[in-house]
Image: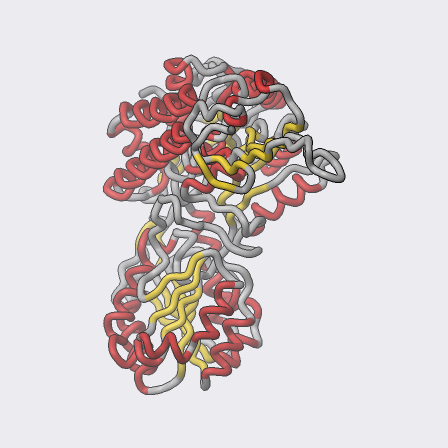
Length: 533
């Protein structure tokens, strides 16, 4: 497939828009080489065209039946599969990720689209709620009141660097925003612009095949922070989905709330995903835990938002055995290619900063990284709870294949570490049933700190399902009530509207007396699929 290096505005295929702007190239981190072709930064005219088309599409989409949206989502998946190995090969060249990993990620991307198609067809996600009128109520008659969720309007989505497919152009944010009935404008991540263009073309073809309005999707290419802020500040933008760094997410959030009309930003940002290993677990399986930890930290070169960056346990011989074994495993770990040079620099700078803290010792891979490649050496840093509690930097994410192991002298000190944590995506507890009984308070505390609790496992790997919550208190996200993974993600991009005393034929189909769509509705406080009597 030929790449044109341009943005994709509404129905235009790549190559049909203006190119009088700054240029940049993709970079192969595994080979240390720039890639063809040149890519062109989206200009102001292209931004305006994308939002004008999206604004017009937003009105049309409100009139479309859910089946149109479901079929569109399925068609996107079909078009992505139709790109074949060319998509995987380009994504691998731009990210350094192996083809096997990207094949799985493509499957997850398509599965997400199909999941939201099912959600849209079933229809109960709109939360139709009906309180029937009671004209005989005293002292005042009760009005007829009906409420449901409707699309929020054009959504801006920022592609993530670490998942060039599943969290990018057709990833979870885009899929959920489209499923809710919104047009989407994606700001492509500059680390994989070719992959982004290919997927954007698949979405445009799916829109054409499904008869969707022209402005339902656009892609903007570019590297500048100013471009990102322009799309967030545009008056037609109604919400933002973001996955990336705390610095980047906070800049977008601040721009959104300072608008004359502030809009919601659903940003997933930094997380160290603490793991608490309790005494019984250490006594029973210190070796197994050490192996599992090393594998989880180095999975994907540590470039997962759920990488376990902190391990906390109680001092003692079992803890010493675990630390010694973990150091051996990290000594033997193989350096691997990170997504791009900027991420590697940040990782290396972060390790140097932490290694310089008094009370820290670091062990890293004994195998040297290749100079010409963007390779990172896995590392483990060892300290005690007193040092950890006295140094805020140790609580900050170092994105990459490293973790900090903290030894506490007592249960009280371990709990002090837990209570001092900021917000994170996940927390993990390794323990026995006796451990859980003794550390019941730990479970209660961690529920206030994270969005997902894992028991006797590791947080890497996020199941795409209805029960999943991929979010957490700040600074993990800007809204702990939302998730970027799972069916519930659709509700980020919808808002409730209430209809009072409306005639039957003027109501949305989901709120009419007859339950035309056979969805679950709350009628006079009873959940039912029955028609209103």
